[in-house]
Length: 250
Length: 130
Image (cartoon, rainbow over all chains, first blue to last red; front, side, top):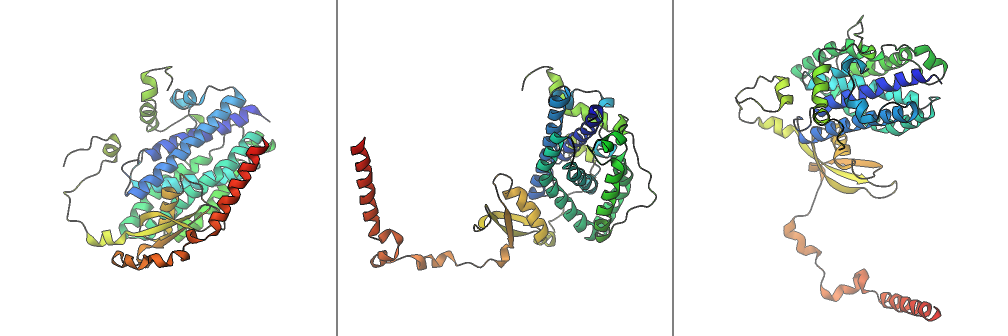
């Protein structure tokens, strides 16, 4: 197995999970109703948990720093999350559309990774896939409901979809080691993932009465450390506590 | 209106209006569903609580996090609260049993004394041996 290639793959997955999890957690306490608040918060905890498990593998198998330092003490350009996940949350429609795009991609990614030649990652994929299945159910239920509920809910969902879609395509920005990952059987590759993802989301979007914009160019950059202006303030907020007392044990 | 101190709310930049009288229809829309969880295949579904939801699909989505998060469970039912039929508490005297019918309760069986006697005998034998 090409170690650099596997490291690259896991780091971007971990960063996606952490940043996305943090964005989801911003709804804790201010969700639209109590039950939804609890569900969304719980999903956000799951995501941070996935990030932690991936960071831990990076420490164990590749000698990278421990999860706390990886998660909270890197420079902005060292984060490999996609721009979709770092964007500040415009409104609940945007939160749900991002959730829908992201979790469908996550579910397919982890489903495929169950067959990875990198055994630890395959094990992890088997373990967390069930959680992500629920995340997808949650997203689908809301998208179908709000896509077709009222004129206002429809137009807000469509606007969020139009804005988020180019960023969502950026989830599949190829990394520098695509061919190595495919050849060594670690991962099937971002191109294949994107194709499966589109097949999966299309009928649901149609059923919801929403539309995917055609000929959309992906907004990329996140995977190589080029981020939108929304990431820096988020990282600052996220690491505020840990930076207040560097080296303290919690 | 006052600005929220919560930075997450400030970022949302909500243009708030003065609160209106609650829209009754909206409240009616969010009915309640009773949640039943099953801990193991084949076991009975046990009532766990209630969730607010606009329809059965979302009721299931919410129920999973409300009641499936902290206990092992393999399946869940949700049932619209309005579909549950119940006795009135005024009628709870119906459930009272007259003392003369104690023989109908499982505690009334004489076999319990026999089992107790047998247990005593066994433990006595064990004690004698050691």
